[in-house]
Length: 421
Image 1 (cartoon, rainbow, N blue to C red):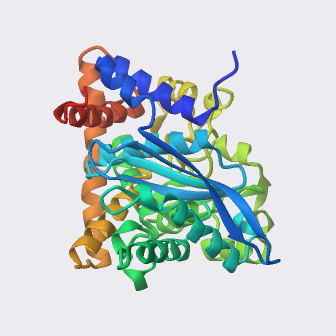
Image 2 (image 1 turned 45 degrees about the vertical axis):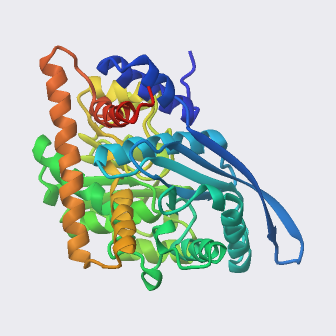
């Protein structure tokens, strides 16, 4: 039987697994299997040739039981409603696991941002906000950057929403530039949170981080920051990849040289002094301690999970491991830390940005990192404690299922308290 790779069906299957383990009330389960609100919009945008082109956009509010929706906006030519729905569900669990006062949401536009100039990107960004403006707001749904969207795009969106409401609304969007009251520490927060989780997991596995060998799939925002931060900790990154392929060197790779190569040629594969490898080969390397999938979903599947040799898998991307692969890794005693724990640093610091915007008082970078460390380290400890509790009761569950149990129980409890079921 072919493995299911539809992202939303995967998200539902992960929920179903947790619901069975925790004996979730069937009414709550039914509510949580589908998003609360799905919006599909048409966006007219002026192109460089003077013509107006129509684009399709989405905004999905999965749950607001615990607070306003929270989730990024993606620009991608293969964007789909099913992907956005899955990501909105994962945002719900991510915010709940971190125990911050948000629900989950996500947005996207079907477009090719790499082919657009700044004027076209601004046109489509402002058009998106005009189209979804009635569905978002600082107390309703708070977007943020995601795949191929930037702080500048967030600034345009915040400005458009502010124009619609006749006043500055800095808290409607997070991930903004510092000039319009973004937060210190926001831009490397996803990777920074991942490094805090790696630190805690390494203690558990007795891995010396200063001697750890790491492979990273993906050299975008999260992957590049993870590379830089890991090397600052003393670890050695021996493999890296992007959409064109990857490179490997047992002696370790140079971050500055890789960055320059990527900027000059558009890919890491032209990096000199290293062996070229495929993305698939990177996943299967046998001389690494930590594998960090930081690219796209469905990279570790039932077809290759038995070939993963790392002691620790750190899911910095969204949905890089399928449910079947998760079970295989668990049975093989590979510690796979789930995405909605590992990459929650981005939304945690987005929460800090929103809180700072609302109070008009701003924190230093050190304060942001310290608060992030406290929250994400507690999420890690909560996950392991829940896993141990179930093991003591005779139920062996993976870290992902344990994290789901925590997150789902919190959302279900909020719905119950509000009288939704």
